[in-house]
Length: 517
Length: 120
Image (cartoon, rainbow over all chains, first blue to last red; front, side):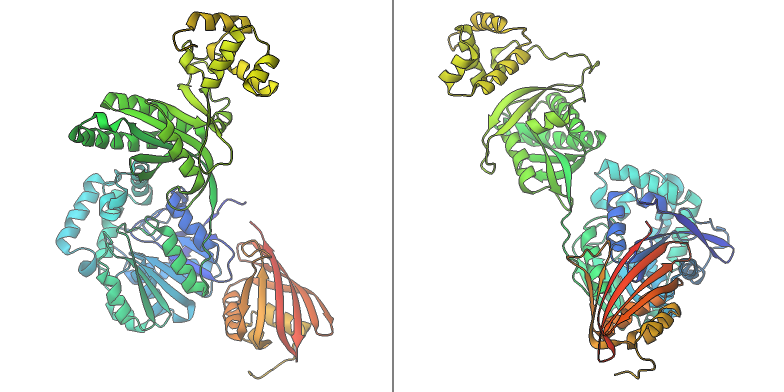
């Protein structure tokens, strides 16, 4: 696939950066809000998901408004009016060869899209306005709060400090918070950000609403943290051909929260067809972490420590390149792109739990999950059952995890098979035994000199070896195939780090206690 | 029924497409015509279906509103069946190629299947 090309349209003396993606039969121009950066959008999961959804049914035209992202900067002493900025939409459409397009205006992009629709009705196929408003001070913030916001942009711009004002639901997501800081820095300088805020504060398009004839869909999140939903209710009353859909949620940016809901509504409105619920499945490594032995701690101590552990969990999962995917009762679910990262995270969590004064028990599995929403389905249920089976401090994984982590320098010990209700045959499991070795190429493994590391079946096999029995005899006695016995013997030697059957027999003799080896 | 200014044939279709005349194109279709589009986003088992002259008219208006070039190269007619190929280009050079099969009924397009591919 060709990389997405960024081009520049000329709007008067100003160059406006734009991208065109998709091959749908009609054009859709996305008019972004406060700040944007065409290159950076594709790096955020929610943003790129939104753009992919929209470009699946349209030819999607994206641009950075003047003063933001990849477009030319503005003279902060002579701020352009909304009309001038709106004309950038026309310039981009001309450059992209778009005679007529549907416009999706998000947040501050909405008034610009409305002004465009009123000015160029023949070029407006339809309007979708998400989290929009006609008058800034009435529905976004009054002048005194704007002053405080501008002061913050002067002092803390680029740190991600504005995130709580836009997406309070994401402030605990360290990866997104970091991305937001970059988003601020790469979208505008502090001076430009303050200037943009002032320009947006001057927005009042109430006078043009009656001139909008294009079919219009209004989408607003009920508890929007930035723009009062009354703003869209007002638009619904004033725009002739408008329909308002209020959706749940409080995060304001269109690419946060339930992105698919917004994309579904937009697709249905613009194509006249129900968006087919696309079930996209991706391969993921799931880690389920629980606090072991919860009864031992008193309620209050439990509550304090579990809270601390939960915070640590969020931090460590992010640090290991994973994503927290919610909690299910006392199970904390996280997902990773690969098993090695998940195991390293699990090991870090085990240590962190000890530091906090709790014990962990963790399960890990690899399988396909739906890319939408929190992991559910078989892979998630198997992982949760593994976590439920895991003993104190253990990281119990399916054999598949160990097979996929080959070459990672991680070590595993066979942990037998576990029968799970939903699986036809018992699931082969392993225990992650050690963190990455300094020299992963070196064939070192932990000295599992305790017979307890053997499974019950392996213990039986060891004691039969000690009796001097051949594999064939052992197979007959345990009603197994000879091949299976061979595998058991190999595993035993591997686990105990012993060179031969004789050594295993000697080991068994040494360790025979009252309960046998 | 809109006034038919031209009979539907290969030459008329070529003129309308190359001249980006959406209204003329829409007038070629029967009221209950069906256009099926098969491409990367609309696989053969789930083609995009555009039913009726109103929807088809919107479809052609969308296509014709773009500043792109269209060239109809090969037209084959056989009784009530018509086929043509079409090479298109966006201003940025991106190319689209379509092959279309048409069934005519009473001198109008009753059914059309378009298979298209593009640079990416």
